[in-house]
Image (cartoon, rainbow, N blue to C red; front, top):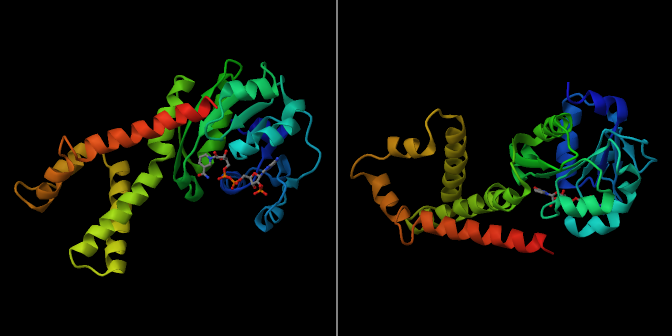
Length: 271
Ligand SMILES: NC(=O)c1ccc[n+]([C@@H]2O[C@H](COP(=O)([O-])OP(=O)(O)OC[C@H]3O[C@@H](n4cnc5c(N)ncnc54)[C@H](OP(=O)(O)O)[C@@H]3O)[C@@H](O)[C@H]2O)c1
């Protein structure tokens, strides 16, 4: 089992905020003993104190994994505490947006196994999707172990090269915000058609949530699901003619939005 090395050698979690806590909750619920986890965080939450993990104590000599879940801007302060674990068999697994593998290699040692991962906010309810990519020292066993850990907060996909991370950030990393905005604007449009605000919002939330679940579960692809609910000359078709307009519909709008996010991600990772 991929998590056996963690039970034997331990796991270090650097930064236990929203993402770190969501993952830790998943591991503990999945049977990882609290005694195998060492957390470093300047302000441990009450929840964290109640878990029974080691908090701000001396670290094991060679933990199986050091998971880095601090904000990118705290990295410079936080990484020195990890340097002693570098260039060995401890896998560094980072979920920090925009911090490159090369940055970790220069801070932690070029021989260190390093895996960069990009989760998204539905991780908080175990419904995230995380993309990951390892450096040359990350072995298949290391990648399997990282995948098993990341599955605590949802699905995991593997990338072919780190350059894909900017597009991943633009689609699934930032994507939940696009969907939240879709909910807001769908509700506003319902209000404009005469619905009370709270009813319009309830309809919009449940429609996006339900359709998202259906799209994930169905055998048909989303394009087919759309066709299935579009009767000729019906109401859905009337709306889709607006939304699917080549000039100013969803296709060109989302293309521009996703490109803007990917471009910004490339800019940020250049520093
Ligand atoms: N939240 C998400 O959905 C999401 C999605 C994708 C990627 N990420 C990535 O996940 C990482 C964490 O994000 P988050 O949302 O969980 O942020 P967060 O809630 O601010 O958590 C970061 C934690 O690290 C602690 N910390 C700060 N300096 C530290 C240090 N020197 N040593 C150890 N711990 C330190 C912070 O403590 P204080 O609060 O006391 O400063 C905080 O508890 C980020 O790099 C982010 O890019 C998050």
